[in-house]
Amino acid sequence: MENVTSNTLHKEEGTTLERDPVKTVIFASMIGTAVEFFDFYAFGTASATYFPKIFFPTLTPTIAMMLSLLTFGVAFVARPLGSFIFGHFGDKIGRKKTLVVSLVLMGGSTVMIGFLPGYSTLGFSAVLLLCICRFIQGIGLGGEWSGAVLVATENAPEGKRALYGAFPELGAPIGFILCNGLFYVLESFLSASQMASFGWRIPFLASSVMVFIGLWVRKRMQETPLFRKAQENSETTKSPLKEVFKTSWKQIIRGTFIVAVTYTLFFTLSTWSISYATTNLGFSNKEFLLILMGSILVFTAMILISSYLADFWGRKKMLMTTAALLVVFSFVFPYFLSGTHNVAGAVAFLVIGFFLMGIIYGPMGALLPELFSTKVRYSGSALAYNLAAIVGAAFAPTVATWLAANWGIKYVGLYLGVMSVLSFVAFAFTKETKHVDYTE
Image 1 (cartoon, rainbow, N blue to C red):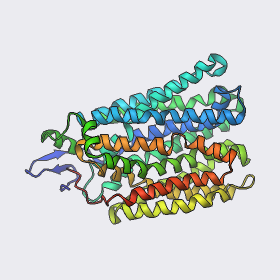
Image 2: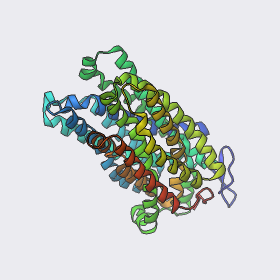
Image 3: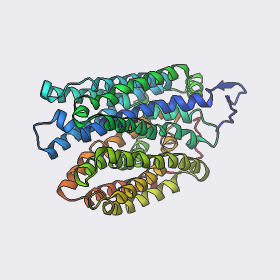
Image 4: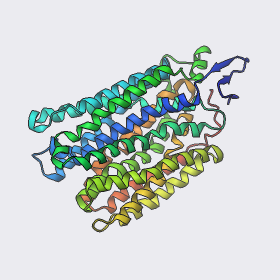
């Protein structure tokens, strides 16, 4: 790794490449993922709470809930297409331009959802428009995370790659708190009928504020120094996708299953749990959102702590241990969600779950890009991350809802346990990446 000062990266021939100030790197990488997760939480909360009645009012509650959660999965199916598009151009023309476009697509489609009429106005066409907006949102999301972590890690000083990679990861809890905090305030002042009529639209429309801020910051930042160096040395490739499948297909597969469990765990905790708690455990949506927002603070802290430790100890052993602990958690957590209005059990489920989630998710911002060389790093990390979204999250809330309704909540734990085992195996076949030369 190159020697790094606070403002420059030194090249072997003695010249320097300027890099953005740390605060610009933090904000530019964090704002997009904050918007990403804000948008996903808005859709996840709405699909678990309001969409069954707004878009599927003629169906039974269980079927309506399952179909509503399936619309949640549409964006995950679209994300690999986004990773093809943004990965190609991100490795060919640079990280900055692609991140600006991804933010516009992602934010624009989210705002459009806020304007959609319901089934009572357009019938099935309303559901179709919802899925189209969700699909476009997924395309934009397909290039967001991987580009953001490259902005962070390709500007990182030596020995702090995982810590810098945590900046975009922090967008997850920030987006969560902002979105669900907004839902909590709205539900505190609006009646149930008002929320169903127009209140649910406000978070989707409010996303536009964050998008404008993100665009302003990203247009001011420079291209990452390592990509500029690759351009100067003619080390970029004209066909990144062809190159990544030719040279790095094994890394894509390993990366997919390494990340998949984080998706399954996260959307089990944040999306499925809301619908289960409000329909089976006697919680109001407002009550459970408050518990969720409290537990997300544990998630935030563990992202930073685990990323710091990953730079100190390395990635592999810590993450393999966490995957093993997730197997244990998957068999224990159904006991936390027993009884009616069991607040202590719900708190234990969310706090322990988000504690483990923070440990395994934090270092991903460094580990996943470290599997790939500079010339295919955007394409490779985007493909692995977004294929993991399909494997681990696209249908996780729907599958969990179906399992709980037909087989019992213990089978939801078994589902999470299987994903944890697959992640453990993927880690086992992955070498330690802490000392990978990021300039190559």
